[in-house]
Amino acid sequence: MARRWLRTVRFAVGVAVAGLTLSTDAQAQPAPVEQAEISARPIHQFKLGSSETRFGPLEFVGGLELGSDSWNFGAMSAIRFLDAGQRFAGVTDTGFWYFGRVMRDEAGRPSGFADFTLQQMVDDKGDVIGRKWTTDAEGLAVKGDEATVGFERAHRISQFRLTPRDMTGPLGDLDFLVPAHELRRNRGFETVLYAPAEGPHAGARIVISEKSLDRNGDIFAAILEGPTSGIFTVRRSGDFDITDGAFLPDGDLLLLERSYSVAKGVAIRLKRIDGDSIRKGRVADGPVLLEADMGYQIDNMEGLDVWRRADGAVMVSLISDDNHSILQRNLYLEFRLHDK
Image 1 (spheres, rainbow, N blue to C red):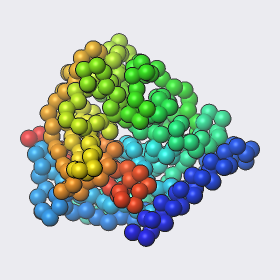
Image 2: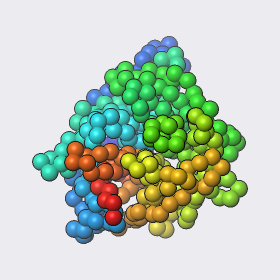
Image 3: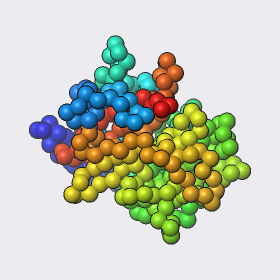
């Protein structure tokens, strides 16, 4: 607890110092790469006090509670694997890129993070931005050496060249189609992903907001490119908001949803969206596969990715955003998705 408190204090001091130095000429330099040592405590049980591993079609494989002495570590909003279940890239809502590798034990369960680096986001001139309002990165999509990031507050969808040890500024911004006045300040684009290349949207980028609602109370989303481009919505049910998503091999979309209240705490949900319902002008929806509350090993789960294990199993990875708070945790969780 003392180390987490110290890290929070260091983060606050670091933000203050960055704010003071942004106006100097020395700040207009490429951001350095920080190598961070990550500690990891294995999580063997998803449901507290239970050895149960199957939760509907999802089988809990393992997880990690992560920590670091780096005051920049945390606030992880999105994760995407560059190699299936191994190397990954991500963004934080404090304006950092992060990269690393999942280590595994003899049974293939996650055992730690290695080769973990952080690099602060810069603008198109190479200057560190350092302002929460303009670097609130929430969603990430990766294809080859191309990365697309969704930012909220100052709403935009930006393209970058993915060079893990030398991340430069944006190459440009995409038209996100949804009228800007419909996007809520802190409820913008949390999900950015590429549609399957073989599907009806032919690899187009798709964006989904967290909780920007239309007049029917459904969540704004859009297909950004190609002949199927246009606005659609995702059905909102209960008090859950969307924090990330990834396409499954069969073309359906797996969405991560989260709710929070002072009385109940945090809860998460995984919903499988029918891929055929993702169409311009339609409302996409599907069944809930998993719902978990504070009786499970969860926190503020914000990032999700889907990948195939070497034996062909479809795997689902989740990561949490601790908001640099001593009351929250950085968690990494893995599940196997079964057909039934």
